[in-house]
Picture (cartoon, rainbow, N blue to C red):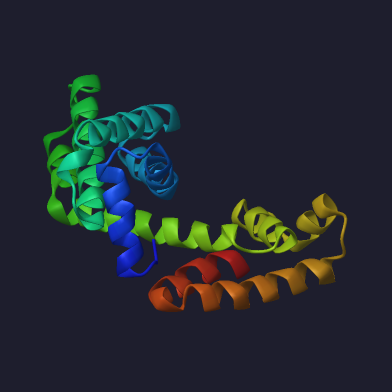
Amino acid sequence: MRVIKKDIDIFIDQLQKGDEGAFRVLFDEFYTALCLFAERFLGERESAADVVQEAFLKYWDRHTDFDNYYKIKSFLYVVVRHDCLNLLRNKREDLPVTEDIAMDSDEFFQNQVMEEEAYRVFYRAIEHLPPQMRNVINYALEGLKNADIAQKMGVSENAVHAYKKEAYKRLKESMKDYYYLLDIFFLYLFL
């Protein structure tokens, strides 16, 4: 959420007062990234979504306790991590001790949070592209080649290439504060 401090303060105040619209904004902001984060632990989408929904419910039960955006974000990630590990321990009694320890380490957690935050920022930038460019990028992320994308969209391969090129420029501009993520995503997209 890239807004000025005053807007964040207003947003936090709305959350503390139980504003459901503000909660919806928070949910929309983090739901996908938290699901990806949980799915890394659990290996399945449905359980990950359940864990994330529970985390939001736990947050909502305590929403008056949080006076800082980053505390909310940390709380959500920590709850999801904790609940995923508990679910894994309960589901798989045979989880090797070394894997259990590795998944529980702070370094693993921090790396996962950073990666999911990167995805959140990237997908938010994609959402702000014009529809044709957004479609091209989404198809490219699914692994489709330019010819396949052109066929699906009913446009020429040259048009797909032009959309990709323009989308790249726009994503680069909108993500300039996250320059370290660009190389990773664009290598994946344009190879």
